[in-house]
Length: 420
Image 1: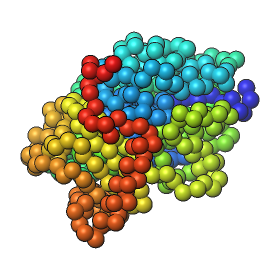
Image 2: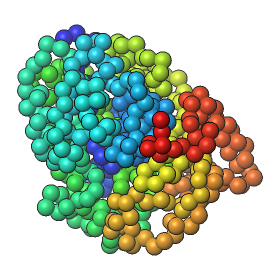
Image 3: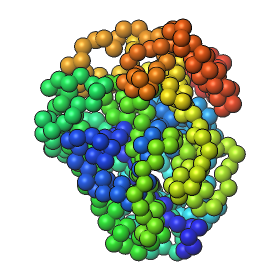
């Protein structure tokens, strides 16, 4: 197998954000992923395109924004790719790649329509240990063709039943600053961290299968998640806890080194980066940008702004944002509460102890100085001294929406049953 045709393993979790020990979360027990980071490029400013499962994963696998590829809401509620959308396995096929999906996906009710040559995805609730065991068996044999193996975990999606995910000690947890530090929150986080521990062990089994198998010298490993954790002000929001994600990329054996990359990147950039890695042309329809030079330690130009969006989750809740030059601008298209909580968060222990302040009405525009106000707690959109920043970011957001054909520019986006 030539160096230009390396194997690629893409491991993705649900609802993790950056909650790993290596990302500075005390109380999280993630030794295998922490160890992976010791020989990987670790991105500290990686963001998803949408704080919900299907739209974010759609961008990860197409290199296109949700409003461009059509997957603007959850697949099981009827949202789908536009006809003719190309996914990563389809784009790698001309380079001779064999593609396999093992475990969870969240882009289509029928995983066989996603372009993989082989699919082993019998149940969306398959536990991490079983997913890892199937992946390890698959990796046991050497193949004549380069491969793309996608391994999807249900974890760390709610709920966190104790019989599957024994909770960690609540006292060991440092509660994130955006959450209320109450016993209910600590108990909730303790269960969440328990699911991380179990899933981390399963990833370790996959890493062992790679390192002890025939593919260690020619396999790249990418680990990431779809969006932030299922807690208030994270999943389902365009605030940083909802958009910032873990991203670890490990080169093959013999080329591994630890690197911390602070450059802002988006999961929309993964497809063009992998195409760049294998020497495949990046299709004009792909909207992300390759960050392969950053992994190789080569200089790159200024990073592009981070754009993200939400259209529909449990309810229609359209919003768009730009994150650039130390500021974030959010545009809310519909009136509503400060936080419209997904059902799993609404039913959580954390919600029980947080009061109802999040039900106050939201502003149409939000602007945050991320350097002075990393918690995004003080909206500066109406502050006169920040109007130049607001206007500049609003204009750049407008341009991006026009360039990418955002349908919300023409009015409310119809639900899938109303789409032709």
